[in-house]
Length: 101
Image 1 (cartoon, rainbow, N blue to C red):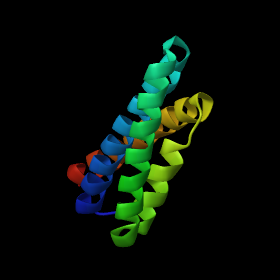
Image 2 (image 1 turned 180 degrees about the vertical axis):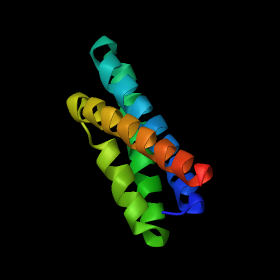
Image 3 (image 1 turned 30 degrees about the horizontal axis):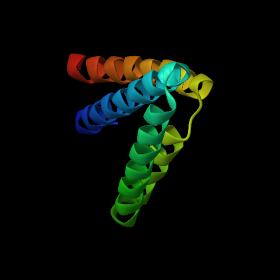
Image 4 (image 1 turned 30 degrees about the vertical axis):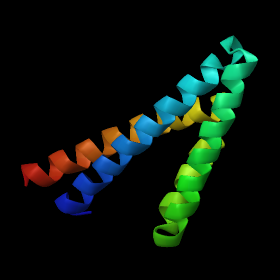
């Protein structure tokens, strides 16, 4: 990877981390919700799915990633967060090696 590819991947990782954070937060708070709140969540879940479907036409791979995150349970989302942290560390190391040359 050259520096340009590393930086683009770092931005992608940052976006995925944000999505995972939102997903884990929603899942961890589900037990505290009242029935009305759950209906509102279902509406917002449908809106998210609609946006993913729109994105699928232009960027199918990105849509697949987003859909996978959107369907994760709390355990999967937490493990994915750890994986994203590791990926970010590797990308930073790669960028440092490129810049040190």
